[in-house]
Amino acid sequence: MKRKAAGKNMTTALRDEARYLMNTYRRPAAVFVHGKGCYLYDERGRKYLDFLGGIAVNALGYSHPRIVKTIRCEAARAIHLSNLFHNPYQGPLARKLAEWSGLDRVFFTNSGTEAIEGALKIARAHAKARAKNGRAAATRVLALTNSFHGRTFGSLAITYPAKYREPFAPLMPGADFVRFNDVADLEAKFDPGVCAIVLETIQGEGGIYPVSEAFWNRARELASANHAALIADEIQCGLGRTGRAFAYQKFASLPDIVTVAKPLAAGLPLGAVLANEEFASALVPGMHGTTFGGGPLICATALEALEIIEDEKLMKNVRERGQEIRAALEKMALDFDFIREVRGEGLIIGLDLSVEGAPFVEEALKRGLVINCTHEHILRFLPPFVVRPAQVKEFVTRLKLVFAKTPRPKSIEAKDSANADTSTVKTSRATAAVAAPLQTELPLETR
Image (cartoon, rainbow, N blue to C red; front, side):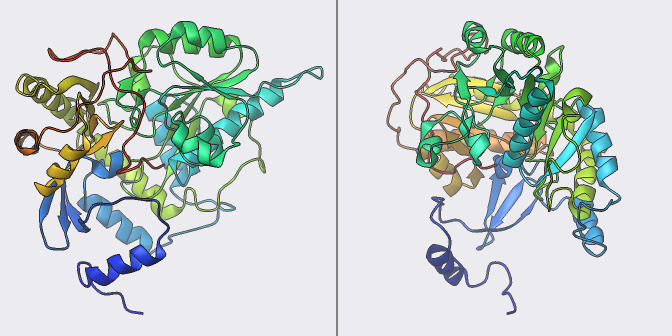
């Protein structure tokens, strides 16, 4: 059947969606049909400034000419080749990721949640290989409160919000949660039975909370002492999002395993597990695999995306535009008393409110601005790396108008957060208290 052009017969398309898609998302009425740079366009041709970036996926924005050219070229050559055979792009892409990360080996996946699954398997395999004299291998996995690692059974077991886990219990056994940035709690729960600790260097869905240097350093020490893996989930905060190749590079020590995905292939589905030689060597042929992960078209696109970030000096742009956005938001807090705190770095920024955030998200969309809300009260901004100063100004102007025109939403009762961190820089109106760990239903995080 010949497909109709995008933007045509949307009533039929939405009716089919309502009838045949599984009921997993609550979506607004807008139907986006194409994008260019930092802008999206709906079926009526209306233009929207995108400061969500496909939830950190579209780091290069939309329709970057080099990405379009690469996809067209490779699609005409070979979209898929079995991983039973070599292709021209896996090796160069793996080398680029190793150089960026300081790690040694790479395994390609289809998504972030599969990368987490692979990382957990590597940690378990490493622990089993070390077990001697009939002793049981370490199997416990530690994660942090307010974490989000994905929706498959292993990643879901180490995802903190109960609403994600409980419908599918029982999950992977042996998972436990450490209070975010609480070194004493980490020490109390880390024992020789732990094979891995998994943490997001900056929690994304959890509210844009950075792991503290003290917590990272102690996790590194405990992991090393117990021959366990320190796994950094950089699926949202990695690959340039902070203005560094990886968010953990602000610390002196490296993780053993890193997971990446979202921006890796400029919108095409690709994830990866990166590991040092010690942990990577726990896998041998036949222990792990994938059908689609690392195909030629997608790896060529990812390699081009990383080279664009280098060639266009986009990490420098991320740092500069991020500073502009933070400064504007902190100034905005002087005019709107419901702004409690600005968090994040580079282009992963959270605005913590004392009121519900969903009404602002809805009003923003009406006014041509795409943002989202997590934890019911934290507005999350993840613009593309290619965002320009003029677009930052446009964002600030639109957001001010949204705040001014939206009837004041319901207040959020201030409670002690599992992620309260006194090391975070706060605005003049901010408080240390944030709301309880509940998340908005629209849109949901995916991996």
